[in-house]
Structure formats: C-alpha cells, structure tokens
Length: 285
Image 1 (tube, one colour):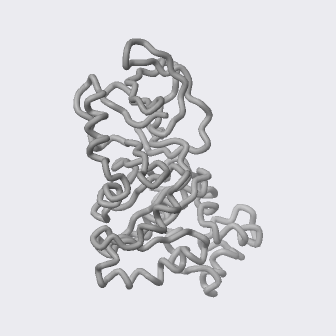
Image 2 (cartoon, helix red, strand yellow; image 1 turned 60 degrees about the horizontal axis):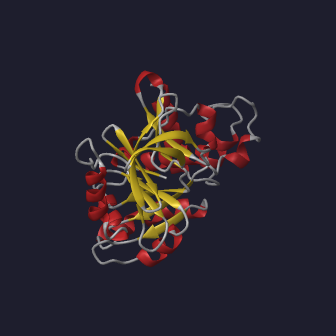
C-alpha cells in the first residue's frame, strides 16, 4: 500500500516495513492509498511495477484543465465543520456532490461542540441526516463523541477534509496517537529530505481502520463534473429528475422543473437547492 510521497520517492508499506520506491515512467500518477506491485531494486528500495485496480479515486484540479489523483481506494470522506470558523455549506455540498459521483460515501463531523454557537448548526445538520448522511458531534477539547466515530472508522479507509481551522489536525492526532512518530519515521525513510506535512499521508488508526491526512484535499473541486453530474450529486434530486417537463432541464428557471417546484414547496431543502444554483454558476466561470 502507498502511504506517502517522499520527495521524488513513494513510500510503500509492505509487511510493516516502509520501502522507498520509484514508479515506472509508463505508469499513471500513483496516489496515496493505491495498492501496488513492486520489485526490490536495492535494500530498502524498490520499483513500482503496477498499480492494482482502484475501487475509488479522489482527484483535484491541475494545470491545463486536467485533474490529478489525491487519494485512492477511499471508503468515506468525512467533512469536518465547526461553528468557528463560520461554516461554508456551499463547500460541503461541493464535497458531497464529488463523492456521490465518485462512489465514495460522505459524512459530516461537527467539531468544537463545546462552543455555544454549535447549536446554531443543528437545523442544517438535520437536513443532511434526513438525506441519509451520517453526522457526528465531537470535541477534541473534552474528548466527547469519539467512541461512535472510532467504531465507524474501523475496517475502512477514510479521509478528513474541510475548511482551515476546523480542527482536522487535532482530530487526526486524537485518532492516531503516534502520528508524529510515524511522520518522523517516514522522514527517516526518505533519501530526499524531510517528509513534508503538505503531502497526503496514510496512517493506521489505533482502534482500527486507515486515515488519509491530506491538507491539499481541501481544494479538491468540480473540475471533472458537468452540470448533469452535479445535479446527480444532490441525492434528493434523483427521484425528481424524471418528473421534469423537459429531458434537458437545467433545474434553474426551466418551465416545468420538478426540482425547483419541490424546493419552493418545501418538499426538499430550499437552502440546498439555492446552493446548487450557485455551484452551477461557479462551474460556468
């Protein structure tokens, strides 16, 4: 399993040992979380021969309107939010739309519930709960709520994402007690200098499961989605799409749009529909 990028090398974990590998040039970009076949090139060093089939892939925008792999074989993306900084629900809907189209489960973690302002987010959280998304309330300060989260992280590969300042690093440190030790071990394995904290890294959670810590994942975007896929990323829209008057309905001001009418009638959350409209405008820029 690929656990990190180290300078120009790739850290592959095999039988609890870290092997610094170089990929064959013909291979596509290797992502953290990839399962690979490798061969030994020298003691402690290897060559990645093949990337095994991925069950999921998270990408981010790259140059020239292309995308770049961020992490592979992910089961769940956990979007971390908090009352402070102010919660960006447009960003949440963007993450969830990408996950829906990538075959990756999505969930919400409300951190810092020790803050009084956290209750102000309950109504919006309820919207996601009703749509079937798992939601968790935790506090790294009081250590509240982590038993349920740890249980649901077991036997899966997860990613934490969200705005800066919501406490992703604190949650990671709580779940991976020896995170700093593991990071230092990766640094020592690298022949190209210190392991950087801006690189995606896979850690084994003490209570079971794997967690990919990637500051860069916060910018994964809508680069590889079109308007139809964006609409499909709103799971409450799916049962209504076939009821629109026109097959090419854009779900804006289109005549006979079942989704717009459902939002206006309160059958689906108007707030989510309005954010969908804002994302379609963002995609057209």
